[in-house]
Image (cartoon, rainbow, N blue to C red):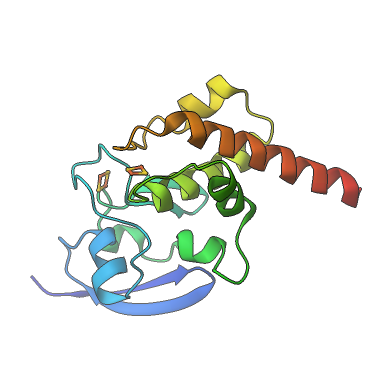
Length: 163
Ligand code: FES
Ligand code: FES
């Protein structure tokens, strides 16, 4: 099938490319654009390792065709922070041992980032529900939840200090 020309804004940068109609967004990100933070776990929308933010919503990029994302704004873990300037969530995951093998971590943090924008003061239960689409095969949920709660507290404290 003929490739289609699409435009994506990824982590603030406009990218134009050709995608086959059957091409999944996760493959476009990783193979065409070299954005390898989002991982491929199940490819059947169960694990959440491929989570990215698409126009303000967390999506599993193995369930979206690249052509469906034409014109969208996408944020991946690469857009949240980098080794020289970690995002608060990346700091708190490190401090609270919110990762073991790290395979789920990019998707988990990208989801948590959106969750904290949807609900800046989540309860533990709301966090557990909010990340229920992201599986951690190392089963480190206790510390993942602690890390997200700590990030919420830090973000709220800096908001108050700025007011
Ligand atoms: S790889 Fe997309 S949900 Fe598992
Ligand atoms: S830290 Fe290993 S899968 Fe989550």
